[in-house]
Length: 463
Image (cartoon, rainbow, N blue to C red; front, side):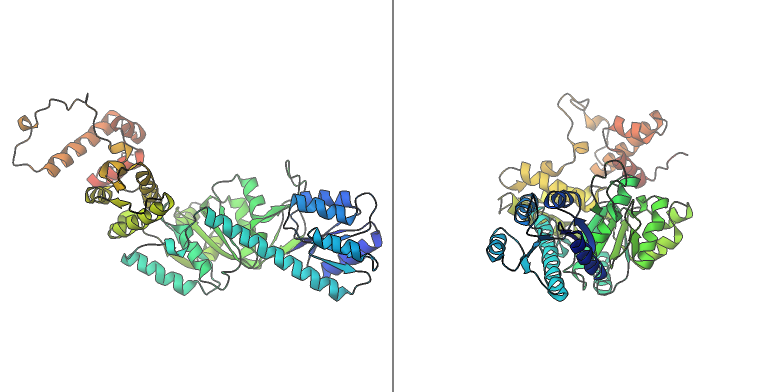
C-alpha cells in the first residue's frame, strides 16, 4: 500500500482530498501547514507528498526544498492557483514531480498520483539493486556445481519458480540457501518486483515482529515514527525468511495468517493491510522435529513446505570442489586485481581432505583469505591450511624424535597418522570426561572438527 501525505492549510480541502485517495486504496496522512508536513515526512515512510503552494509561514516551495534536502527521491506534487505559473515553474526547477492548477479534476489528480508513486517505487527498487551489486551479492550465476544432487536442485528450481507455491529450503549453514531463494525469484513472474530478505535469528521477538509487519508511531518505546514492515515493502514480490525455525511460537500465528489470508496489522495499529507476497523460507533445523517438540506449528509447517528443496553439504558433493575453487579464484582475482591468480595441485589436494563444517561459505572465505595472502599469485597449501592444522613449532616435542625406533618400515604413513589421531582423540575425551569443548581445546582444534573426527572414527558420544 502506498502512503501519501497531503499538506494544506484549508481543513475542508484536506478532508476532500484524503477521502478521495483513501477510496483509491492509498494510506493517507494529513498536515495543516508546511512545518507540520515536514515533521510527518521525517517520521513516516512515505511514497508521495501532495502540497498546496500558498500557505502561511512555510509555503509549498519552501517545504519542497526541505523535503528534497531530507529525501531527494521522494516525489512532490504541487497544487497551485491558476495565476501562479511562475511559482509552478520554480517548483518544477526545484524538483517537484508535477503541479496541478486549481481547479483540477479528480481524474487528473489520480493520474498524477499513480505516476508519481510508481516512479518512486522503481527508484527505490533500483537503489536496492545497486546496493546488492555494490555488496557483491551473487545471483543465480553464483550457484556452481555438476554434482547429481545439485542438478536435481536446478531442475526443481526451474519447475517451481513459475508457480506461486511457497518453498522451504533446508540445509546446513553455508550451503547457499539464499542463492536458491534468489534463483526462484529471478526465474518467476515476480522478478522485477522486490526480493526482501529477513534473518529471523538476528532479531529479538519484539523487533522481529516490527521488522516483518512494521509498526505505528508510539507502538513501543523507541517507535518515534511509523515504519513499514518487510511484508509491506515486498508487496507483489518475494520475501525470504531465513532461519525460520527461530520464529517464536507466538509470532507464528501472525505469519500463518499472512500465508492464509494475505492480511496483517502493523504493531500498535488496528488497520488491516493486504499484500501479495510469495514466501520462501529456509532452516538448518529439522522443522518436522521442531513440530514434534511443540516448538513449531504444524499447520504453519505444511503451509511453508508446499515445495521442499534440500541442499547437500559440501562434503557430500566434493566432486564439485574444483569447479567451486575455480569460481572463487576468478571472483577474487578480479576483485583484487590479480587476474592471473591460480592454485597449486598440493593446495587443491588439501582442500579436498578438509571437513568443511562451514560448507560453501567457509570455502569462499578460505579462498578469499588465500587470494589476499598468497605470494606470486599462486595459492599454496600453506595459504589454505586452517589454523587448527598449522604445523608444529620448532620447540615441539617432536624435535629429535626417531620414528624408526617406534614404527616398522613396512607400515604406511596414512596408517600411522590415522592410528595416532584416533588414539589422541580417545585420550583427550577420556581426560576431559567426554566434555567435547574441553577435549577440542586440549587438542587445539574446534569443537565442530572434533565432532567430525569422532564420526570419522566411529567414536560414540557418552550419554
